[in-house]
Image (cartoon, rainbow, N blue to C red; front, side, top):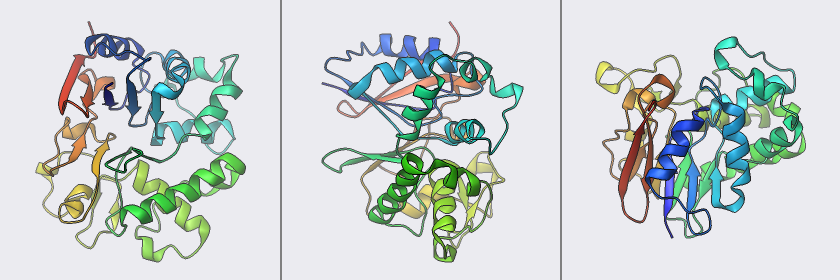
Length: 267
């Protein structure tokens, strides 16, 4: 049995199929973890969702910011743009079924032995791993019971520190921002969202994973940050978004072999 952790697919269905063929994925024995942003911007989000959903227990997924934005649009709290390339998904005959499936995806997934953890963007500097799990579980509960309450308050950059989140709604927004949007933080750990480029071009802000360099954590896997091109300098924190939707590569990491595999975005 092998466990493969795959970076942002973003509707790149053909590249996903070639990557699974490359690693000789066997759904009867192997498992795939998807780091979120399953859909949007790529050529075939509908086929991607249908395929991953059909994998059943062979697939473990977390929600990314693009997945949540699509769900918010479904419930009337945002609007999609042509660049999202989600018109086909919006018109799918099984749309309600796919929406329900997405609503049941968590923000964080941990292995049964707690040795590995996957999140789309990262873990807030103020948190412990237990804090992150509790905060993420609270959001997941609302998504499966009263999703409108989440999407009504989801958008916004504040509060940018956990200790400033005084209400449930503020805690939900902070948790979603940390788990699905965060890249850089201020030196005091406050989240910053405007900058998306390489850490090499930043002198004042700190990549979120640097705060975890000296903190206890399981082996961490994240996507979201294509500008890293799959590189994280912190031991046991793996960046897996290698920009497939931007014409680069789609990458998988095999936990058991500690090995990366990539395929080009185009044949």
